[in-house]
Image 1 (cartoon, helix red, strand yellow):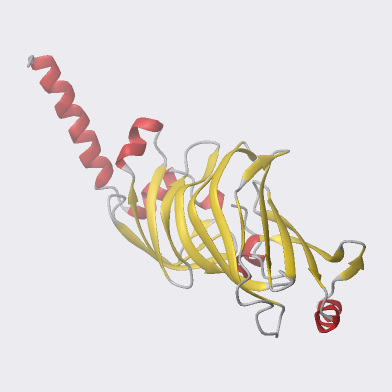
Image 2: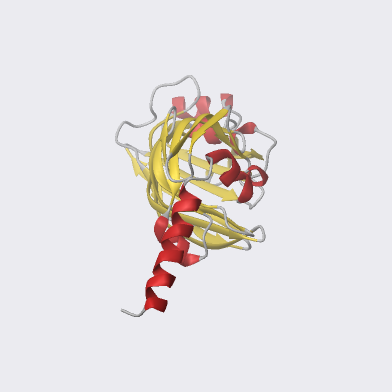
Length: 246
């Protein structure tokens, strides 16, 4: 191996070492994490391996988060950080924090729907499997993976149908990320359409259908309007109910 090649390898290795020793707080500031709503009560460690305490993303409370530089991401333009939450949300994946890009890759996790969409007219547990979401200049550019919702119930009520599981795949539509979820069990059908923009706003459309008269009364009490398709309700707001953009 030539001396020039050895020098190049040494230079790259030294750069990686110096990057890895950078304090976590400074490294996240350099990547513009705060502009995307990533904040924490306290940050410790280095960008190679650190921890955020009392972290939140936009208005969504994450709890404690372990995170570090995604080495593979250095060859894809940088600004990629792996993370694993230790709080009300159980999740892991890779955050995109480079330039005008924002989002996540290979996102797996489970969390209460009410944590991210407090105004949701139904309660349940969201499941994320290998989810990808990427916004560039505020517009959705890529989306994929699988999203599910189980333990579905109206506020203050028992599960609508124990076997009911809604599922669907995220996609990009009109510059927004759209997640259509639908399911049918025990005579109850639900369609949920979640629309997310690059600033952390959401629009949630929920349609319920069932033949049980008691179900109709519960839907009316929960703010649904009767339509020819069943019962419909539309809610809008910011993820987590917060004011900071993603």
